[in-house]
Length: 235
Image (cartoon, rainbow, N blue to C red; front, side):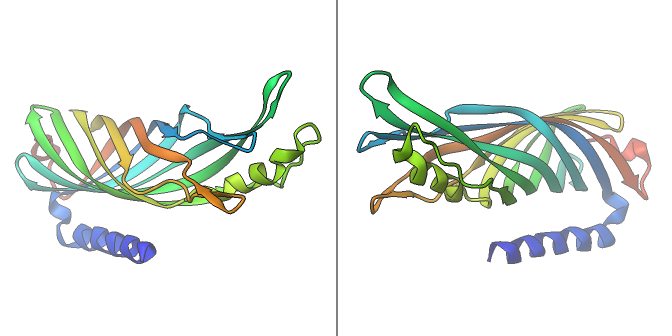
């Protein structure tokens, strides 16, 4: 179902491109994105399981968008973006002498996002944006790892990469400032679908992730279609 929806979005994008090209532009950009996530820590029979809290740092991102002006202050935007999301996780075993001996692993998801936004001009050159987006990802998983010093965490540790969902749906909002053909944009996307499946340990299920959002800073360059640059600089 999700893949069908994405195909429909892409079809509408290119249909609009052909019909309304005289009022459209193509924007190509790059920047940095930061993934911020919060999760839940559990202790199960002396085994600690937890997602690594906080941000995974800024990572490169690329975006291409098709923008169609529908009114003087209003613009529709259909985008395709690419970035990588890094999910880290922790499994540990309690030792009466040293406390928890922790093992940290990670799962990288190469992610394509498909935002649909409405851009509203507030002041000359400055505009606000908001909309919805879907994300499709490709997860990479390394070979299973076994630890001799904490044998009790091996099965849990090696099952944790499988809980991360590569696909999600969310909403976003942000703002931009236009200078000539360049747009400087801040955008925040928040997932409204869960990022993980429950982790199954000894027949019990445990949720790992709560809130997940992405902060992006990027700059785009506009290519206008069949319209003078002076007429497009309204937004």
